[in-house]
View 1: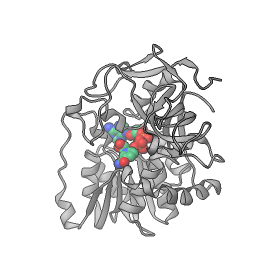
View 2: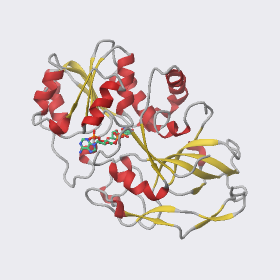
View 3: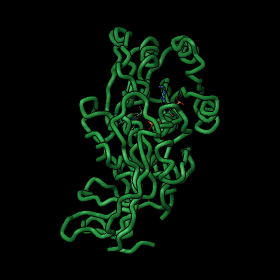
Length: 349
Ligand SMILES: NC(=O)c1ccc[n+]([C@@H]2O[C@H](COP(=O)([O-])OP(=O)(O)OC[C@H]3O[C@@H](n4cnc5c(N)ncnc54)[C@H](OP(=O)(O)O)[C@@H]3O)[C@@H](O)[C@H]2O)c1
């Protein structure tokens, strides 16, 4: 067990170069060249974190692009330096009044064993540990808040409405579907393998699910599951799926634009052709980012913790062991290798 003030080797995942197209494991290297002092400089207001669980999230691909190619306003990773993302961490040392040694937190950190965070105000303290700690990378962390805000605040669902979710077995989608079922909606999801389709129906209680990779005509597939049309589309993938959904919306449908993973690795994004249907059906399409909803986190916990404790919602995680396996886990998101929320365990408490 490392002690405050000790100097230790700090294994890191380093971005080699800016990425174009699909990311590869070889775009990152594992380095043990750096050391770190497990002591926060006095008067600095920082915290020294031991990182436990790293979250693999699709937005991280965007930060691997050259700054001129990024969208979304977050700064790109710097080649030669560790990448970063959401994680669950333990406070080893603190000069910040809100945190003390031993606290568990979630928020953004480096992909490395230890991180000196000089401005930790945006970290969330973890007060509830009767649920799996890893849930704070997913169900109780950023993806969970995304599902909650996107579904309740943007989609504004009503009982009995017909809901469609893409990338439905992933970190966000599996929760949106379960929230929609709890609300009394008819829920259909799509995913990229038979295993995932089975999960959607058997584990998460979706009414129907289909493998989009096996459908030559997405419009026909949606007409099969939504003969009367779609009230709510929770958009995670973009591209051809969005175009097909637009042909199948009902009057006053809502589309929550959460993500468009099918576009993240394309040099030239695909066009959308069926936007006219928004006029005919008075469709409201609204994009959002989770960071605008973090003020609702306490309310989110009040809603979701009881649902977990009463086993009214469930959550599937895909866990990679060790920082060495982080790059493969991260790039796997873009070929659908993950089944459920992808995370990387680098240390246990
Ligand atoms: N707006 C926000 O604040 C916010 C926050 C979090 C996430 N997001 C977005 O939400 C979406 C889902 O994120 P997540 O964390 O839940 O990811 P995830 O679903 O856990 O993982 C990504 C999944 O996307 C699917 N996928 C990959 N490439 C695809 C393609 N070309 N076409 C269709 N599907 C593809 C794969 O599943 P299949 O096997 O099913 O293809 C893959 O497993 C992403 O677009 C992400 O960027 C947005």
